[in-house]
Amino acid sequence: MKNDYTAFEEVLGYHFKDRTHLDTAFTHKSYANEHGGDEVSYERYEFLGDAILQFVASKELFLKYPEKSEGELTKLRASLVCEYTLSQITRDYGFGEYLYLSHGEELTGGKNRTSILCDLFESVLGAIYLDGGIEEAEKYIDKFLFTDIEHRSTFYDAKSILQEYAQSKGSKVEYILVSATGPEHNKLYEYVATIDGKQYEVGVGHTKKMAEQVAAHKTILTLKNKD
Image 1 (tube, one colour):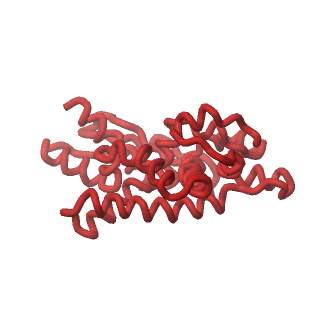
Image 2: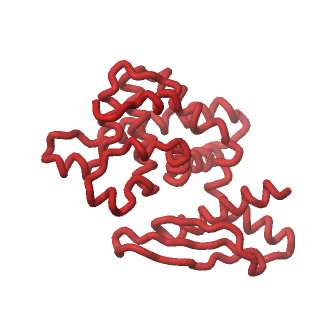
């Protein structure tokens, strides 16, 4: 075992019988490669966690919303299990602090990278399943994903929802590019959502669409809080 995971287990609400599962769940492939193959990366755990997440989220939404159509359930699931939502959860709860990265990946901000933080939600889920079974895995998903379903559910249609809100007020929504940084294969876009020229929230993403969607979602939450 590399880290002391006591505080993290308190956050999870689950105590591992074999904490080496957490070592694997937090080992990025760059760290494994840097250490000559002696380490195993989290990629297999992430693969497993992704499958469990899709199944459990589908089952829970099916049972929770008997009135919703297949299309509505698909959209809702997409909002809940998307990269943005999962990375926000792991960022808020400090998952990145336990991450093992190569020296170069750490210097370039890997511990706060959205794609990696999303991976961690799924790799930790895989670790919990392997250590404690499906019931504990479902508890993890319920605790971190289904506690704020109302806010998370707006993400998939955020741009449309914000557009409809603005139109109802006779206003116009626009997204303005703030910055585009990084190499072509790993570009990071930053957009700000504006309503009638007034700037609201900023969104960051690896595509223009994702950055705009994040900005729209954050703006919706801000407007709801004001109301």
